Each structure stands twice: as C-alpha cells, then as structure tokens.
Length: 501
Image (cartoon, rainbow, N blue to C red; front, side, top):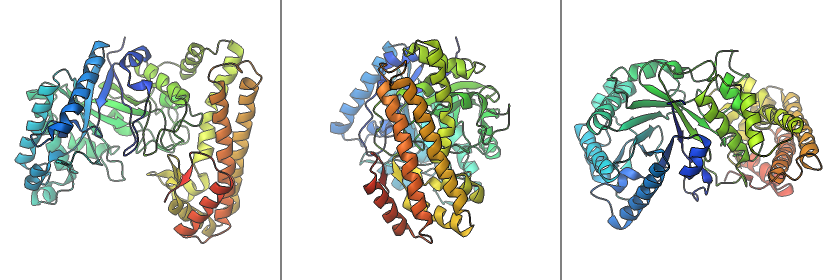
C-alpha cells in the first residue's frame, strides 16, 4: 500500500451555500481510498477564530464544530487538516505590520495564532497555506496578500525574497517549533506567478531547511484547470516534498453537468499540448512525491448545479488509483469503476467506457475555441474565458467575435461550432442506445447520464446559434454582446446557464 497522502478537499463556492455531499464524510472517503481530509478551509477561517480579538459568540460554536469534524475524521482512521490564506491577521496586527513578510511583528502575530490553533486542535496533522488571492473573513480579522507590501525591503528583495522569508518562517514555526505539517499551496496563477515557473520556485525554495514536514503543492496544469494547459514542469523540481493537485468536477468545464473523464490524461498527459511520454503521472512525478491533493467536488464561484456526482466520481476514482500506482492503465481503472457501479454486462460496459473516453473530445469542442486559440495563443485563460462555471461572459465573447471577424476567420469559427453540435448529437445517440431501451436502461444512473448527454447537445446547439449571432453583429461592445446572449437564453433557456451581469 502506498504511503502517499491522498487528500480530499470539497471546495465550496464563495458567498454561496455550502455543497451538501458525501465527499466530506470520512467513512465514505476511506472506502474510496483517501487518507486525509481538509476539515476547514479559508472560508471557515480557522486562524481568525482563535485570535484574542475573536468574538466568542461566533468563534466558539465554529471551533466546536471543527473539533467535532476532527474527531469524526480521526475515528475513521484519516488525518485532518485545516487551510488558511496568507496572511490572516487581526486588524490590529495589520495596522502595525501591513502584512509585510519581512516584519518581525507579522511573524509574532502568526506565531500566536498558530500556537492557539494547535493548542485548541492538537490532533490536526497540519495546516495548508495558500496565497495568490484572499477571501473575506471575520470582522475582527483581515487577509493580506503577502506580496502587496511596498516597503523598502520588499521592493529591494522582490517577490522571490518575500517567499523565501515565508518558507523559512513557516518551516521553523509550524514544522520545527510546533511539530506539525505545513503545506504551501502555490496559488498565484497569473503569467508571472510562482506556480509553474520552475526558475522562480527554485529560487524561492533556496532557504528550505530540509524539514520533512514542509510540503509544496502545485496543480498538475501550468496555470488553472483548463485544457490547452501543458503539464506543470515545476512538478519535477528537487526540494521539499510535493503534492500534485487535481480537480474532478472541473469548474471551467461545466461543473459535472457533462461527461468529462480525465483519467487517461492524468496518466499520460494532454495530447493537445503535451509531447508523447513527457507528461502525466506515468511520465512525470516529483522526486519526493508526497501524494495528491484532490478536489472531488466543487471549485469556482457557482452554486452546486449537478444533480449527481457521477462524472466527478469517475475522475476521483481515477486519480486515487493513479496516486497509488501511476503505472496503472487508465482504461482498466475506468472499467473497474464501472463494474463496481453495477454496469455488469461486459460488452455493453466496454461500449459505455468507450463513449466515456470520447468525452475528452466532447469537452474540447464544447468549451474551447480552436480558431481563437490559434489567433491569440493564450496560455493563461485559454479561449478568453468566454464561459465559466454556469455563466457566459459577454465582454470576452465580444473580444473573441471582434478578433475572429477582423482576421476573416468567421466561417472557420462557425464550422467549428457546427462540428461541436455534431459531436454532441453523435455521442447522445450512442448514449441513448445504452440507456434508452438498451442494456443499461434500468440502471440507477441511467436518467442522469442521458440528461448529461442531452444537456451537452443543447449547450452545443445554443452556443452555435449564439456565436452565429455574435459574429454577424461585429464590431461589438460588451453591452451589445450581452443583449445577444440574453436574447438567445430567453429563446432557448438551459438551466443553470446565465449571462454575467
């Protein structure tokens, strides 16, 4: 059995209702092969709850709830973690230090908070710190981007110097003094971030003092969870142990509403960008691989929209299996999953597995825009983020339509959208043969699976007509694009789709 950590984290949408899901239940997670669970994240705000300035009427109930989750997790044989944004400080501390990573008082405040946290929850395995964006927290606390300070020393030492200090202080404070694990999540995903820049990461980790409890975590992609993202080459760096992060529900790719199996690509790389035998866990692992940090449900900013977790479950099963044994054949993993799900007739199951494997092309054609991709060559935010979560983005749509029209590529773009509809209808027909009168008609997941393929087809046809209208109306500004999108949605509503306000 592998000693690698397999961490589960349900990523709730900010300012929305928490996702009600079995993927928080320790007994279920153990059955799926997970070893660790994030029991409280930056939305919970664990560090703010233990501050001296905390309002006890708020903090005590929340801490009691976290403690109960901790005990439930440990009782099931799993390790428990909490997660926070850097820096989470009291408002009084922020007035004094401004969250400067080189200010001793910043670290005195951090030390007091972490000591109080682990005194209150001593059975935690450790804490996960993320940076790159910050969420709101309790009214007595603030979250500060550690690289926003403009003091003389920060300007002189730069971002690399700031992260060197953060790594050094957290290794000493959390790992040495408190004896806990500390995970640094590289979460700055812009063009100039540390996340996939091997040179910057190597420099920032130069002060690492080889404490085995310090771990670095990066996404498997070079930026966010889009396709057209090469495998993150910082994965193979020497230095601290590394976690690799995977998102199963795919916030940019319809949030579990459509078939979207990624097991084969996580095993051997993404063919649209990765050279053969260069990427995926079979070909690229950290020298000191701590394990995988897996988001089985959630991500993004939308409410929970899928009525079933089937499509995220097949991805979760795949990455758990590949973490245990990265040499496993992904198709064998998929077949085993389907058999356990009650798809018992071998020939029909193989047909369904083939259809699931075809979902890679389905999602590429539904969500991504090759003509625009060729014109813009975007790595960060490919296809200009014209659609994310459950939302069309009118400003991005206007920019895309204008560029395509200016370059005289309208017909090619329209052909691609028409082809996406053909692919969706073809795969729907194959699904209907299995689930609407075929061998698996009475399977408990039949209705959801059919609905998924029908939704994908409706999205393809809706977006085909929408892009035809947009391209016929160039040049466009944001408001004009918004009016076209809203008109199409009113003629052909497809819940939960909406247009960005």
